[in-house]
Image (cartoon, rainbow, N blue to C red; front, top):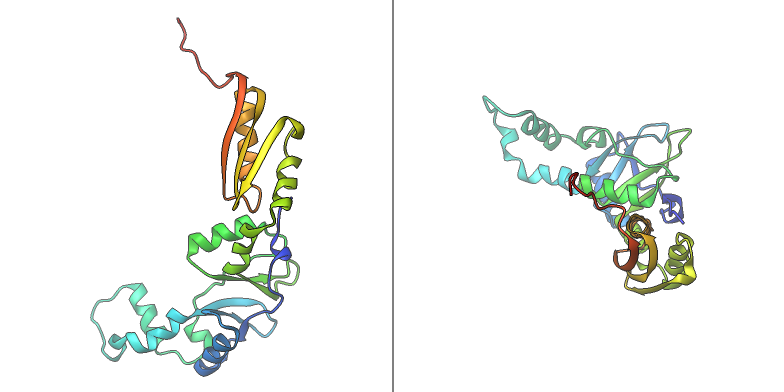
Amino acid sequence: MSIEVKDIMGRVAIAVLKDASFAEIVEAMKRFGVGAVTVIDADRRPVGVVSEDDLLLKETDTARYSVPIIESRRRRLEHQKAAGVTAAQLMTSPALTITPDTPVRDAARLMHAKRIKQLPVIDVVSGRIIGTLHRHDVLRVFTRPTEELDADIRAVLPNPEAFTIEIDQGVVRISGGVEWKSQAVVLTERIRVIEGVVDVKSAVTFDKDDLLIVPSGM
């Protein structure tokens, strides 16, 4: 079973309008206990994100009071944000978004790659925000009941009765036998991509090694 964003997402869209003030952004973060809010336009479509780091530039960017002769594009953008007073001026754009049908594994990879803790979920047709996926929502996948994991694992096995499966805190230990080494490899990878599986320890044996390349002339 492939778990999708709609199965675990929060149905509250944590967002502010583009003209929201600094104080309103802080209040929204405080109310929902988050470190970032999505910025939306009048049609509820995400256009950017304001994070705690964006707000902290107000205190840390003292350089905005001087005029550097040479500065990088990144520093120039930081100065502009530090001087901002509305969400549109403070936000990082564009906003990274996902849809309800996005696999949770893909959403987790995006969060990890971009070092973000939440993602706005948008309607695939209208593009409007309909919810929020938090990192703690994703982590819940790795605390799935053992019975659910066992059922999903057995569903990808060619002959479930021929294998022994042990699951301990998301780590799967599987033993049994197949005819070809390639079958053992494929089996391990199929289990590894099941949502909730932390790691796979395979003791699956095989009769024939079809992955061994024998040099010519031997």
